[in-house]
Image 1 (cartoon, rainbow over the protein chains, first blue to last red):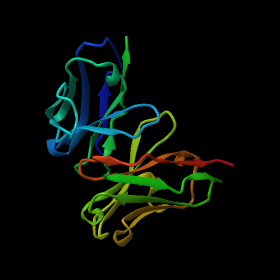
Image 2: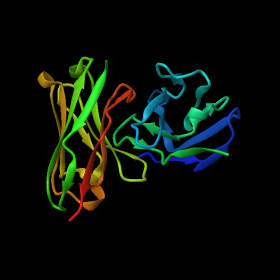
Image 3: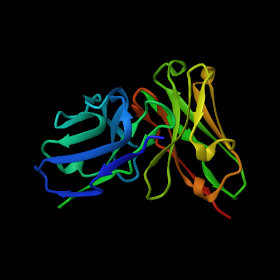
Image 4: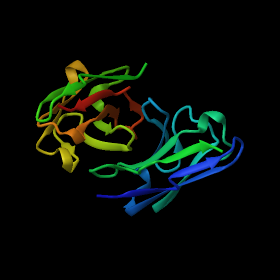
Length: 108
Length: 115
């Protein structure tokens, strides 16, 4: 089983700032199968980034993904008020698919 | 509109059973792998199971193997999760999700296992 470890657990930033979230895998993950989600309280996850770096439909270009192998990054270039939420990475290359524990992005 | 709608959640006693359903609309259901993902209260997401479009392959997380069964009816555009021998640790919101990089999710259905 591939374990995904996200850091930091909580990130406190202000609107307009840049956010950098990390997802580290216990073994190499094919970039094709690394995704990032945003989740707000009481809502289902929302796909942001697939294939490590491709934005999903309707996702603003302030969101970007990068990385390969065991180290992946989600960057939000300039935070908007609606971006404060929990972000989670996932690998779905081979079962069991696994999720990171999440990074909570909170308003400073 | 592409949509997934889960149903069938509720309160069940430990050792009991429950069957969840997921109704798909707005896309060709029979072309996609489909998944169940759960989220315990205040916790992160956990993948539970998935199934190939033709039903010939199924995979489960270890913690539910032998207790949960995923199935689908492509004629009815529906995905199911039969959950037996339920435990307190199965308490969670259960989501179905389309495996196109998990691009479509339902709203979830809550399962509570408690006496």
